[in-house]
Length: 285
Image 1 (cartoon, rainbow, N blue to C red):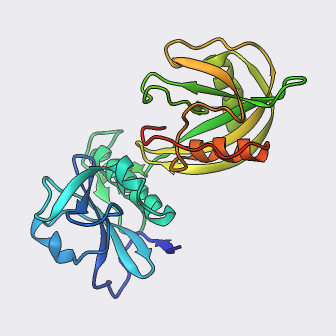
Image 2 (image 1 turned 90 degrees about the vertical axis):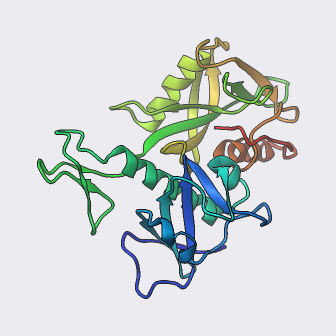
Image 3 (image 1 turned 180 degrees about the vertical axis):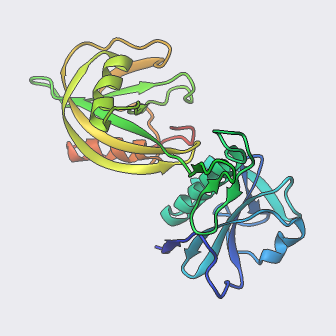
């Protein structure tokens, strides 16, 4: 697996080619005529005539990584939605692409001070934009969110997991429950609150599963499993289109392993004794 070393400032000497995470209107540019994997190190000269404002991200196996936006694709490049592009990347490249998108969105959204409205200035020693008038600094922000797969083991029956779908999902695709952490709330408190709000059940015995950076636009997904302890499913109608209990060997279509929801559901049902579900879709959380 390629190794990514993050950095704020360019490392001397610069690499002869670079991983160029170039975006046009939020879509990643990939070279035309390449295989589906798409992205590869390019000579910086491909983009130099456009003179974009660049953000250094670090290095992948000694090759510089840059993020920048353009008004239009240069010759030989095509625009691809970031989510679709990331599905063909390995874990390292997927992480750096997500970092690039989040850094660019932070830079776009903090050109002016949120306190006094003065134009901000990029800082050389840290990833920050600072107001020269009042001194307020804006750093790239993350929005923590929890994801939880609720399970139960009915007496005399096979284990079940609670899966739901939101109205924006591709029709027929189900996933684990998720929600953003509110101010003053722990991740575990968020799990209990969101489960109660979205489907009306109570849970206990939370177990941490893992986390994933999710650049749509700047989330950090923290995943758990939890055991059902009571209550019947009552949907939060403005958030949940459908929610059902499914036996672990008869699941509906679920997200692929591209997202943490796909990993969470598959790994959990396999640990419970079922075969790994197949299929999936790109249109997931």
